[in-house]
Length: 171
Ligand code: HEC
Figure (cartoon, rainbow, N blue to C red):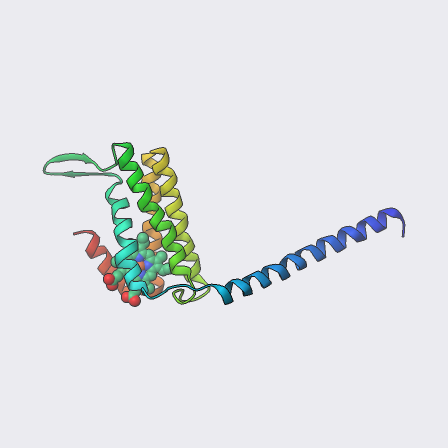
């Protein structure tokens, strides 16, 4: 084997071996985390929804867009730095709610549930960024994305929630 061949072989071993090593150490640290971690999951999904996630999301939706009623046109976006800081904090609650729902003991499976939970966090992060930039258009889009994650997960896991949900938010 010439030098080039040795180099290729080492490269190959490196490519094959490195992911294996990474795989091993990840597995070990995951096992460690699972055995040591203590989560308090006394609140059930219904309570997370009604006490944590929905109040925060409602504030986001009530702070985006505009309404036209008898009193005329009303812009809903925050108009002060404090107002934007407040909605940014609500968006942070949404980000973390994604993690809360994904905790062992809460997650209903290791599949679509996790994707929807992550989707919540992603929409929340978009809303946080838009609020930090005071970007109304992006903030509105983040709210729309958030809404689609809520309804997709309800459709998959508790279809009768969607009808109640729509009723509730149109009041
Ligand atoms: C990962 C899945 C998932 C996501 C994402 C999700 N929900 Fe839910 N939600 C559920 C499930 C499951 C229930 C039914 C809980 C029960 O009654 O046991 C529920 C129930 C609810 C309820 C009814 C609570 C009650 O008092 O009975 C509301 C309101 C609600 N969700 C709001 C939201 C909002 C708002 C969002 C998005 C910002 C959202 N949910 C996102 C899974 C999800």
